[in-house]
Length: 131
Image (cartoon, rainbow, N blue to C red; front, side, top):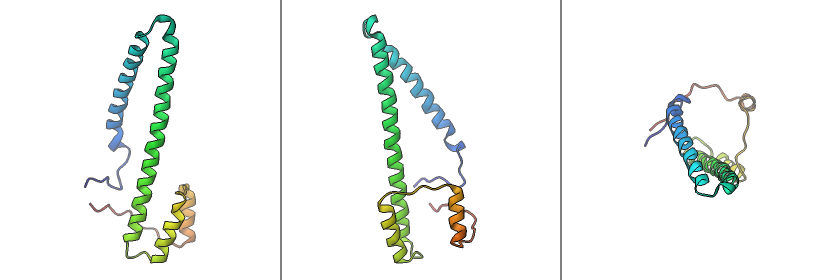
């Protein structure tokens, strides 16, 4: 199984994302040129507008679907980790299942730090993930 280290930063995905972005950008410009050149000149503005609309709509739907899959995967992994951890009491595991069934709440780092301090959770150093 391949996993990212907890200390990994954005540098690890910069080059692959840059290459993907350049490839998609080069492809999209050629696709637009082919689409517009395939119709009579008087219809070119409409075809170009439709092509740009479809591109933006596809990007928006793709981003929403990818985000939904990411949040679902992270929530499932978290709940599975809590359920399999013997150090977590069963009532806490059950409460986590119930609380996260309606959706995952998002909070800022400041609110998280505040909640951890109020719960008297001692600060710990990050541990590397086991593979």
